[in-house]
Amino acid sequence: MTPRLSFRDEIKRNKLKSVILISVIFIFLIILGYIISLILDPSYFFIIMIISIVFSLSYVLISYYNSDRIAIASVRAKPAERIKHAKFFRAAENMALASGLPMPKLFVMDSYEINAFASGRDPKNSVICVTTGALEKLNKEELEGVIAHEMSHIANYDIRFMTLATVLIGMISIAAQIFLRSLWFSSMSGRGRDGRVQILLIVLGIVFAILAPIAAHLVSFAISRKREFVADATGVQLTRYPQGLASALKKIKHGHVSQKEKHKYSKAMAPLFISDPFKKKFKGIFSTHPDIDERIRRLEMM
Amino acid sequence: MAMMWALIGLLIFLVIIFIYYFNRLVVLSNGIDNSLSQIDVQLRKRADLVPNLLNSVKGYMKHEKKIIKEVTDARKALLGAKTIEKKAKAGSQLESALKSVFALAEGYPQLRANENFLQLQNELSAIEDKVAYSRQFYNDSILRYNDTCRTFPGAFFARIYGKTSKPYLEIPKEARAVPKVEF
Image 1 (spheres, rainbow over the protein chains, first blue to last red):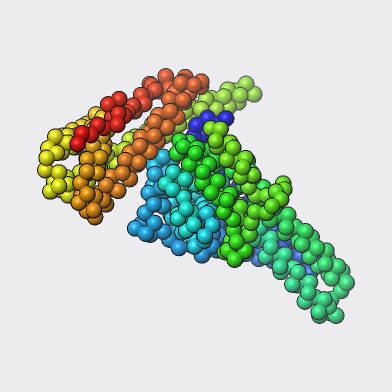
Image 2 (spheres, rainbow over the protein chains, first blue to last red):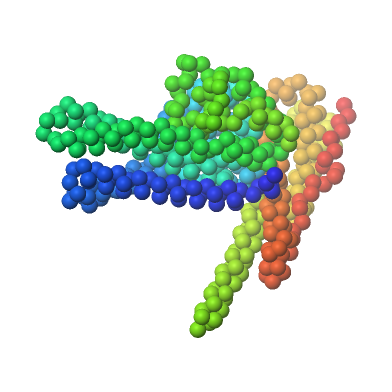
């Protein structure tokens, strides 16, 4: 058992992981630029590198500094209103006081299902979003439990790492798209090109087709199932009431996302939520969240 | 020569360690001060709402002079208190006096239908939560500070810098009791 409120190790680990992730992005880009220059002409190497670095740097910076807004926009959430969502504000203010963190910006997304997520780059620039379903169906203790869980993700910098991981996935899938399209066009008008280029493009396309889903799973591992347990445990340190979150998870378990609602959630966002909106009957090593029964069991043992 | 470099290295290392622990103790004790002011803010907010509450209650609870006096006294004590212990104590007294007011209000259907009263009741119960949570965070900050002050190597540096562990904020016993209400 970790000592009470010791976020420091978690924070260190997450900051280190974030640095590694950024390095991976850059190494990946340099290799990419090198391969492209090999295909075209080695003398273009520096120009291509400069372009790709400028492009990727601006992509990373823009998405990093706007991550909270992007996450909020992708689920079409609206800012919470102090009077209409008084319960939400009250629970969030309580948890901000209990954790000593600045108050995050609050958002509400329209969904019948009970769910919540946190995003942002650091505690000062963080958001918590809950579904209207959660506000309707959870009582005060349950809502506080859920928000405390999200606050823990904010406090130990899970949100920053998640943001960077999502940015990386986004970049790889953009690159994959570009390559697959260029493959398509080059086969359409392949007359003027030499065979070597064609083969390299095909190989690259295949490599990306393999890389993209692997990268998508990186996100799943990023907030691994263990991290959810950590957030559950630290969340309970804020509320001092494990039954609150346990009973919220029970309510989540009994509700399910209808097919109609699923389109509201973007797949890349799944690991951010307190419970996986895409949960399937079979749970494998690739699930983004631990078994909900196991989480409830652990909470009830606290 | 190598010996000298090793000594210089050691010296730099020691200086860094000393600075690190000094800063760590300062950061932790600032955290305590900050959480203290959070409690203060909440207690003050509660004290500020009390006159409004008494105004809305006055017309209905004419015969409950004793409880009204308890509330005003506790509020005065809270506003006059200088140390955190006294503030916390007066705060708990006010809290239990307010609980009695709300318990008594159950016997006044007209009051329970009063919009203004209900809103104040709601706000005061929200503040009660906040007082509890900020007090919890205060004690958590103390715990972190004390852990550093008492465990090695923090204990060594705490002694050098003359920092001693701090007491927790206890809830007074009388405040924990559920208020008695006689109709």
